[in-house]
Image (cartoon, rainbow over the protein chains, first blue to last red):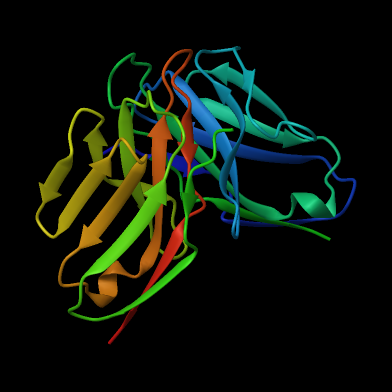
Length: 115
Length: 112
């Protein structure tokens, strides 16, 4: 079974802190994604990566950065956390395929609260 | 725009059928998906349909696709309490890296 793990299920941070969210997948997937999930807004793509050291902005990249130094690991960084970044953060991975069904496999999520 | 829209809530009685609806925007989408998110968990692919199909049935699940109206629906027959979850439809855009756009999610509540 594909496994996507996230470093924390719950996290509480203070405004202005630097926050690292880690995601690891064990299926040698090329693509990795970070989403945030907010009630009534669904999932919104923050950043994605299709290869080591490659990153692309999603729909809402402001206030976030990412790092992909190894294929299996994709980190989301909040340089200076703000209260409007309180949310559920979901990591996902998938194979790089063109024309295929491109199923994404999700981690359990990290619920981040910024005080 | 690239909005995928769903109603936010649906409440059904156990044993009834549930129908969750979705409208999407990209007429060139190749695959359309239904993901399920149980409480406290990430999303899991429930079923999918290729864009050249009108219908797909998988046990209690029936997916209907109306490409003319860009309308996708998920029917769950004999709904059980274990079906209580948030259901997301999603479309995969053609071109580039094949971006997946998710809907807002429909929270299904099954009343015993």
